[in-house]
Structures are given as structure tokens and as C-alpha cells.
Amino acid sequence: MIADALRNSICRGEISPGAPLKQDEIAADFGVSHTPVREALKLLVAEGLAVLHHNRGCCVSNLSSVVARELTEFRAVIEPRLAAWAVDHLTTSDIQRARLIVETLDKTDDPAQRLQLATDFHSAIYVRANRPFFLDQVNRARNNLSRYWILAWGDRVFPAVTQEEHKEILALCESKNREGLMRAIEQHILSSGEIVLRYIEGIESN
Image 1 (cartoon, rainbow, N blue to C red):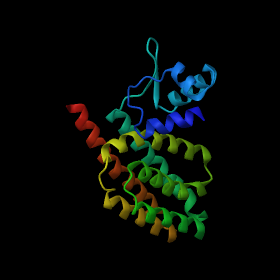
Image 2 (image 1 turned 120 degrees about the vertical axis):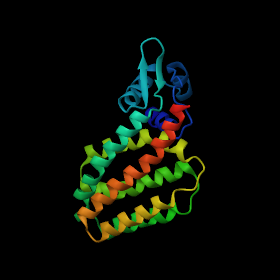
Image 3 (image 1 turned 180 degrees about the horizontal axis):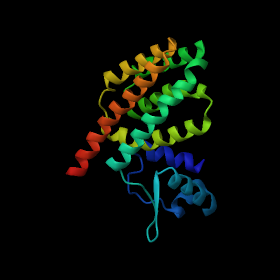
Image 4 (image 1 turned 90 degrees about the vertical axis):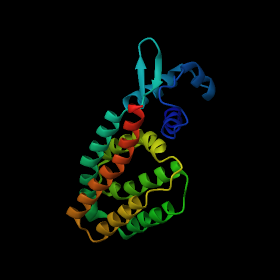
């Protein structure tokens, strides 16, 4: 529960990069001892959302174009494979659920909700791969990248091309076009990743 709450706050940008994660304060907020807080912080460190400094304790990890690029490349390698494993097992209900998510995405302007819906869209496909370890690692990468997307997109309208790519992915799922689906997902991840990378690199150059 503690790890989930802190993760959500970090991924939504409510806790800034570099901010200290003080055990005393967190324990007081949740009304618990230091032990579960330490375990929660260990999870966040393992996920790359926090770093442990010898003299300064635990802090939220800073944003980095190097990290953002690696996370994007990781997704571009793993997610097409998940889709390939999943495509023959997708049901009519799965397709309908994914389509409803895309339709809902068209109607929301909240950046955090857009990110969650985009995650839900991909997960609705990948879950049928029956590869829980792979899916868990992808979700970790997406969680970490959420902080970057929140900043890069801000209050801007969800990119129209992203929605068109979602619809293309959905059509390829329906037609069971495995090779086309893998190519489309790889390109979708790399193109959306470039938006983030350009934004972060601009910050780093200033």
C-alpha cells in the first residue's frame, strides 16, 4: 500500500525528481513503523523510481534523457513480442474493451488519466500473452516513463497521431496480422518516446 501510494505520487509528478523520501514523515503519514516504509522504499529503488544515497538517505530519482531513451528502447523490444504472443488469443471481448479505452481517451484532457488509459489499452492486449514476468517489467518501465510524459505533454492535447496509432494497432489485432502489429507497436513506442526525449534533452541543455 505504501509503495503503491508513493509510486503513484512520483509517476504523477506530485513528488518532484530529487525530492527526499523521509522515512519519519512517510511513517507518520501512514501511521506505521519504519519497517514497512523501508520495504516500500526498497521496491521503489529496485524499480528505478528512487535512489539511495549513503549520506542523504532515499530520494526520488532525477530525470535523465539517457534513462528515458533506454526505457523507450526496452519497451520497443519487449512490447512487440508480447503482442505477437497475445494476438492469437485475443477475444472479441478483449477487442471491445480496447476499443472502449481508445474512445474514452478521445474524451479526456487530464494528462494522468490519459497515461493510465494508454497503459490500460496496451495491457488489454498484452495480458493475453500469458507472460506475467514480461508484463511486470513493461509496467515498471511505463511507470518510470510516466514522470517524463507528464512533463513533456503537460496540458497539451493528446497527440492525434498517437490515437491514430492506437486505432491502427487495434485493427491489426482484429485481423490477426502479427508482423504488422509488431511493426506498428515498435514504431508507436519509438515515436512517442521521441517527444519525451526532445523535451528532456531541451531541459538538460539549458
